[in-house]
Image (cartoon, rainbow, N blue to C red; front, top):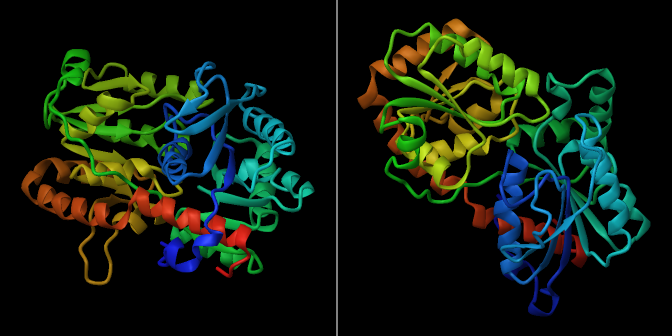
Length: 396
């Protein structure tokens, strides 16, 4: 996190309110992915500080009559609603529209939209940021052309904006090594102190009870590794249920394949996309949370699960280890299994179920540490400081 507060870095006369545009998110009022959740938490906080925030959204993810969300202005522009052209067509339309607005900062999210982050440079006084949430070209769902375009987006995120932000230390190290001339800052995702709820909706909708299920909460896309989890879970001799909470993201065939894989096992429940009270209840009452991803940036869902005091089991990829791997004589906050290894995942699921007392003690420690280390208010303050450094000409 950035240690210096804006009030110490800048005098009062320089602390003007800024006009900020946000490009690259699907929507903001009902988060369906980590980037959208990031925007949903960050930008209302910046709006509350007095800044004018406009978030460009897509109609398929945002109610068309929504013009304001918690003080954030919503501008809906249409896109080509296909797997390959949805994001880039919306980014193009939003970037062109931004040229006719008097924005101080235009903030792009993800390496795909970063490909067009050169467009605002037409107006020299407008400054740009790109937040890298992950190396999306590594995702399985993309073909050769899309992968090449995203690799170009990765490079664009380093060379076009005035500031590049990464959500994990690993990503910052990657960018610093690959693009040594770029200006890169690390600002992680955050969590809020959770509202823990008794089972109500989950009981009436899915017949779930406290400590009666394992939880997977993420988009149903191949890199999240849900197929590993279903295979490993089906090998267990247990009355525990497995709840798969999440929707498709241009990955309907994969989501259908998961349901086919789970067919015949009545313990496995698919809820579809969940949010609000229903998601809070799922986190509050799960026995444990499992995230078997092959690829992540810095997973908000894992941070949230840990903030609820949930025992967790994760693949041993660097972003998971960064969040919960311990180190410096600190015990890991989570159990880990070898990425992509179904047998090792099944083995660790058995450990998870066999040692409830030990894993819950570990989860209590993790809850305190995560709430202290990852905070959305600090994320907003650090982001604001970067914006001010750009328009004020201060060193950072």
